[in-house]
Image (cartoon, rainbow, N blue to C red; front, side):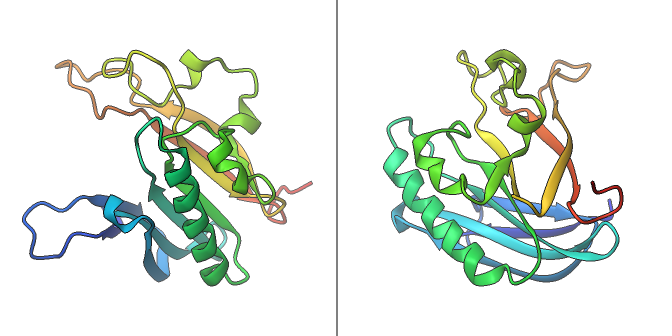
Amino acid sequence: MGYRSHFVTTDPPSQKRRYGIALLTRDVVLEDGETLLHPLEDHRTAGFARVLAGDHRPLNLYFTHLYWAPDGAATRSQQLADLLAYVAATAGDAPSVIVGDFNADADAPELAALQPSWQDAWTLLHPDAGPDASSTLNPAYFTVPARVDHVFVERDRLRPLAARLLFVDPDVDGVWASDHRGLLVRFGFVDGPGAP
């Protein structure tokens, strides 16, 4: 389909079934990498790709999937600290986006470290949306609505332009794409075309 992929996992290549996360992009990839997130026994990673985006400008894309348990705020906080340290070590001068399944609301205490430098695109564009309209958890699988999947854009460098949920209905055979709804966010460079 014309996408380049970057898959990150803690599972060895020889393992038949590997658990991880992937980034798909149509943009030219200039560099990629990955890092492990603590605690290592949770087998979580974060991936990174620097791409040429929009008007062929470098853009950093970071992606992750944090610890799942409702009582795991401390673990998610440590994993986010590891991710932000990785961003600081690899971002260079290019603006950055952090995306993924954070298994927490955007304003959860364990995600507070994002507040100084990052903005949640959905909240900026849909400040009054209620939990049912915002939930990224598929109600066919989860009884309590929650928005745990997020796109965070770097404050003062990127601006969200549009955000909407995908996969809100099953296909004609009643099959759902996932137990999560997709989150599509369009954003632009603050100093790019059409900037204020």
